[in-house]
Length: 173
Length: 277
Image (cartoon, rainbow over the protein chains, first blue to last red):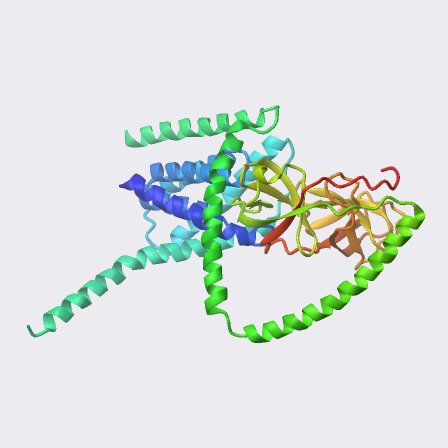
């Protein structure tokens, strides 16, 4: 069940990323919804889920991007695992606390990718801090919406169920 | 116990990733097999996502956002009229140029055949400057063919090329470049992508060449990929003019964040026969 949930989360994130990437490639907006999905899985289901989600999501992203397979997957696996460990050590129930994890993960993930690129090319790549900031901000915004939705959804459904029940009880049969 | 198992699995996966990366980086001959097989298989998935996105956008533009269509149609009709006039003028100029070319004994350049292609996906890696198109090997697409848009040069086809899809490296990409000529000054140079200050910059322009902002930048055809005479952009800014560290920043003609239909030039850039490099 947990594996299915992780696969569904990461699969949906990859799908949305591919669909939206078409309209943003070459532009100023950069985001990584797969990373958001991986951190979501890590905080929701633990380090193993984060690790599996990071591996699968990262590999899919690398294959779709036509880049060296593993360059995106290795940082995502590490970030997913550490995110899961942090989530299991500290009780992160509030959305803003979870978003903070996404912000830190986004920066660390980008720096790891740059470092890997530097190792492969044997030269430190040009770093665009504004692009990194934009990516982190968009990731954080998406994560906030996702975490708020998952926090509020059970309550909303429960209220709807209760209101349906009370409507039935008032009805005269 | 559970955490120890997880740690072990984590270490194994990380080592696996490192081995996977090493295997691809050390591949000396051509493209890694894994990458080309995976690209061919995943191109179908990208075509499907492109179709989903297009149908969603089509639903919006065809049924929801139709207000103002009549006004737009009227404006377009006027624009067509203007363009028809401009076309007539350009034809006349082209006829004159051809007559002059034949008088001077120059070889006439036959326009290269092109193939229309639709962009089906962007690279999902953030910050990457590659797109996938829905034409591939079976349509005659191969690496190093030029890709142009309605406004100017878009990029070139790079590996991998699948049977029904291909990857295009955009001109603004980090390792992209093209041979160019500045229209007014006539100076040559190489336009390079991936800059931090501007999407494009021109390098190797003779120091004495007088380059002014607003000048049009055209392909020179000397790189063997892009045919001569296509618009790349306009000079946006010239920094440190008059010094050895002069930087020529270029604003691209194409809006790279909204590319939908492109043309692939099916033959390499013809030899212009206008002298040496």
